[in-house]
Length: 459
Image 1 (cartoon, one colour):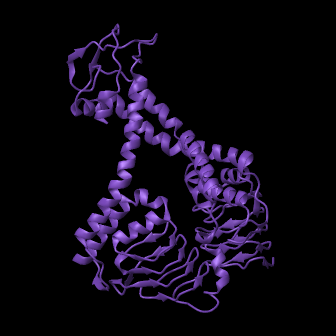
Image 2 (tube, helix red, strand yellow):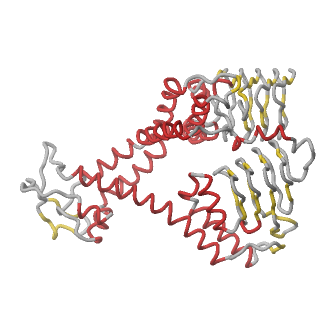
Image 3 (spheres, one colour):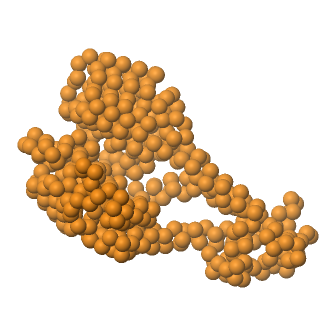
């Protein structure tokens, strides 16, 4: 940041009518600021170069952090714990504490740039010690750990689940290998237990478990329910999609940019920042501390709502209405679904739900704007819906109650179909509703229920 500030100012010959003093170093350093003043007395002729420098510094800083932090996590793992070794270890023992420390460091450091492409993500896991086969795709949201104990064959697809060789058993930490064969498909809400081997070609459907591997839970039809098996746009359409995502990101950051603009307009006591000490003092000016707080507040409140407004506008004007029927053979339909998933899938609504209330009428209004047919007096889940993208195919009638952590799939890898929940129904925790299902009036789905495709559950 200091380098940018030192090289971005332009020389001017006029001087402000008033002198600016450094509020940290005191009045002894009062120096006339060689800049121009507007009618309000604000010094602004250096504002644009300084703002540009600050924005560039933030961008490059974020890019550097996205590369350095994951590498720091990898280094920490190898230095502190080395290779994870199978065995039973007492809770709160030295090995457990080393495991816990590495786990926390990895959570803080994140996966940075590695999470943006399946090849990069697989490279990250391999650097951690996991054995990942070629052409394997893993949901970036999946929680993978104890990497040296993880073995995944080629052409495998894994949804947003936990893939870890860890569990707690009779007061001990148990580490055991977890092996997935080649061409395996693992859908959402699947539980993979350490010490279990999933055979080649198995397709685990939603809400299943590696403890119960049988012909029904691993049947080939389940492959279409794995979201990572869904088709992606080709390169030409993908470029268009990323341009739209970039546009939404820029608009979403406009409130933050406004706060930064006000921050750089805050008066300063010298023309040039010639050293890192000057840069540090510039950032620590008491008046600027309030701007740092304002940026956090704006980013957590205004930005998500602005993003929602832009997404609703794009949904109505660009993406359009989703319709039932086959979609996997049309690049335009594939792009529309991919774009909606990136912008505002059901689980991403949670960020908006934290602001407006996850459970009640404002969430109902939001879902209506996104295209869902929604009644009154609905109790929505606090965690929103994993997998929900085709909002136009969802119908929820009056007085429906939802538990948490449920998934509503209005499409699989082959077709899209409407999901209808009639008045008074109750969908409990961790339920998975598949395309084409209908829940009858006052029907109750118990916790962990899995519906069938194109099936009506009676009133």
